[in-house]
Length: 276
Image (cartoon, helix red, strand yellow):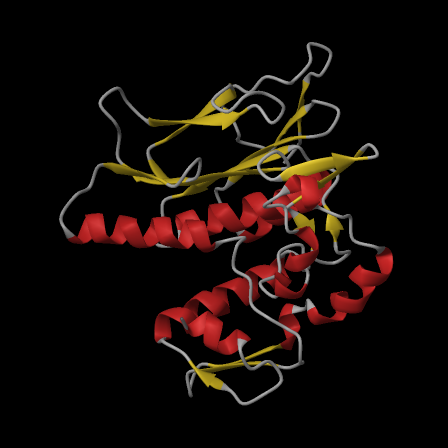
C-alpha cells in the first residue's frame, strides 16, 4: 500500500502515492493541526508501546520509553507535495498510522459505491461507526451508544440520523488495568500516554463526502481533549457536528445541539449541557 511504502523509508526520498492517498493525508494533516495535535496521523512510533492484543503480556511503557519516541510523532514533519504527488516523512523512525480515521474513510468509500449504484437510503455499519443517508423502515437510522463499563451490546442511549456519520471511541475496546491505571489504545499523541479524561465519546456529523471519516477523527479527538476543550474546537471546525462525552465520573456531557437521550453510569451522575 502507499502508506506501507511511505513508512518503509522515513527520512529518505519522497514516495509517489495515489491521488486518493494524497487527499487522505492532506485531510489528516489538516485535522491534526485543527485539533492542536490531539489527533495525529504519525502515531506509528508510539503504537508498539500500546500493543494490547494480549493484555496479559502488556508492560506499561516507561516515561523514558515514551520520551524516546515522542519527537517522532508530529504531523508537521509530514512533507506533502500535491503537485508531484509525493509524500516524505522528515525523520528516521517516523511512520504513518491512520487507525484514528481509517475506519471512517472505509465507510465513506462504501457509501460512495452505494450511491453510484443509485441507492439513496442506506446505512453502512463498521462495528459501531456508521455512515447513512435517508431513513430506515421505521424512521431515522438508530445508532446505539455502548455502555463503556457494561457488556457488549448494552447501550446508554441512541443517536438518530438521517444522513452523515456517527462514530464512538472509548477506553473499553482494548485495555488493561495495572495498579489502578487504565492503559488503552486511545493515546494522547502529545504526551504519549493513554487519554484519561474520557470513557467514551460519540460524534455525529452532518451528511457530506467525508462524514464517516470526520466523525471517526473527531470521536478519537474528543476522547483525548474532553468536553471543555473538545466541544469548542468541534463547533469551530465541523459546522453542524454534535457530540456527547462520558467522563470517568460517569457524567454525560453534551455539546450544544446534541439531543439524543443518553443516561449516565450512575444515578448521581447527571447530564451536563455545555453552552454554545
